[in-house]
Each structure stands twice: as structure tokens, then as C-alpha cells.
Image (cartoon, one colour):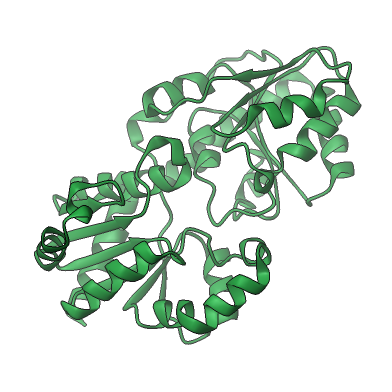
Length: 339
């Protein structure tokens, strides 16, 4: 079995997309499945003959994304070569995403995007939330839910009984991620004991201007981090990940932080309700008022409550190791080839 992964971008600076594709490549290695990655800047893609030969040598084409010419072109080649096709939409068809440039996307949906999804042999959803939203768009789509995972070796086995009163926002600096609300809430609360570090690719200057005239002195913008090993190490410096996102089809950074013993404060626009049910974090509505209330609650929480949440995060993360999930991916790939 050989799998061809298609992703328009394949660079750490693209955050979740890179991590998702790289993660499934790692899962293939665990199961000794041969694979290649074709992206827009790869030599394979730039040579039409080489591109077709590379796809033809694969049994399954696993596409990560949609909408653009890159994906339409590669999927048409895969169809012509009669390859089995899986599409992971990367959250591109989530309600929030569809609400952006709404008229343009609605037109594109009826012209070619609906057909792009319908012609796939299988739609890979990262969560039941994503599957539900896709089925609302088209109930005939053939779907499978396969979460993303983390390497077992990165799970923290030594949670320290220490609270440093440090929070981190670790994601793209983008309005979708809710950073605007976080900065407003943080500056309005103006707690002097806790600090907030912001790490991610994007326009730092836009957000620095937001807090320029505030009295908050405990907000720091740090350099983006791309290396996985460094990312996991830096999580150990914090007590809380805050991601008040407007929408996530999965939210890999949430899983990464849980694996290091870092509780999460996020919204019900993610598929991570488990962190609240397992007492490993806080889930709120997309509301500035709720964000402020919960932040104040956290700042006033006894140390023992925060330590217990830290320990509970590890129990959640253990369900999402690549080693465990690899069995489900292999089963889905084999079932697809047998159809």
C-alpha cells in the first residue's frame, strides 16, 4: 500500500495544516505504509509528467483541503488515474469558514466544490462535530471520523506540583482564533499576578496596537515556534493554554497542550467538550463576558484545583496517541481499497 498526501502548503509556518499532514505521515510510518507528500512548492508538483507518475504509483490519494485550483487539479488527475480518493476538508466547510466571503463561497460550492466532495470515495473528518456539519451540507457524503494524534513519547509523565501563574496563547494570530477577545478580556481584568505570552505566526503589530494604550504590562509577544520538540518543551513553562477560538474542526494545539499537562480554556466551537467532562479545563460560549468571568475564576482558584486539572489532562491525551490511532487509520485505508 502506498499513499499520496496532497496539501497545498507543507511548512511549519502554516500551523495546524502542516501538523495534521505530518501527523498522518507519522501514523503511516508506524504501520510501515509507504507515503509521499505533494505540495505546491514541491518539485513533483511543478513537473506535470512527474506529478502524474507520482500519483499513478500510489493506491490512495489523501487530500487535505479544498476550494483552490491546486486541489481541483490534483483531484482531477487522481480521478483520471482511477485512484481511491480521501478528502480531509481541514475545516474549510465549517459554518464560520463558510460565513467568510459568503457569496463567493456559495457560488463556488454550487459550481464545483460540492462535486469535489461528492466524487471522493471517502471524507475524512477529524471530529464528530466536523462530520455533523458536513452532513448538514450534503447528507450523501461518505464519511469517517479519524482524529489526529500525538507521539506517545511527548506525553508528560512527571506533572509537578507547581503553579507559575503563566498563560499562553499558541496559535495563528488570526481573528478566527479569538485573540481579539482574549486581549480585551485580559486588559479589562488587568490582573497583576498572572502573565500572558502570545506565540504564533501572523501580524503581531495589529495586536500590539490593540493593547498599546492599556495598563497591562504582563502581555508578551514571543517568536513563533515551528520545531515540534521545542513546542512541547515550551508548554512546560505554563499553567494554562487559552484559545477562545471562533471555530475549530479539531484543534491540534489543544491536544498538544493537554499532553504536557496544560489545562485548556477554550470555546464550545471546538470538539473538545471532553476536557470539561474530565475536569481538564474550561469550555465557554464565544462571549467576552464569559471569558472574563472564567479567567477571574482561574486566577482565584486554589493551587490544588489547578494541579488536579493538570493531572487530568494526561488521562485525556493518552486516548489520542498516534500509536493508538494508527490501527483505525490502517483499517480505514484497507477497507477503502477493498471497495
